[in-house]
Image (cartoon, rainbow, N blue to C red):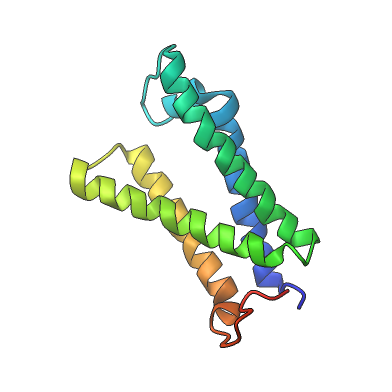
Amino acid sequence: MKPTLLEKIALGVSGFTALVIGAFILFAPQAFYAGYGIILGQDASLLSELRAPGAGLAGCGVLMLLGLWRHAILPVGMAVALTVFIAFPVGRLVGLAMDGMPSGSVIGALVVELAIAALCLAAFRRRLGQSTPHRFAA
């Protein structure tokens, strides 16, 4: 099954967002986190620990975007989009509950992540609700 226009929009928005943010963290973590008011310094271990998930997020973004052009990868792209954009807000909400209120920039990121999660859920709801074993069958 070909993706609908809403599915394409959701994959495009989620994939582009994940790829750009992941690449920014991978190649310029100090600049990225400075936008949140976090000063990282030059600790090679800390930078490595931040670059690694940045690369993972960028890779997830590539998978989401590939789902736009390769129908065989569409189910993977959808699953990755839902996983990333539900897991990130959940992690932030756990942090909010356990650590207190973060900066306004972090709250802004939470709002964007929730919006993308809602878009993905709305776009993929038809496939999520299918009762066949191959729910995400392209």
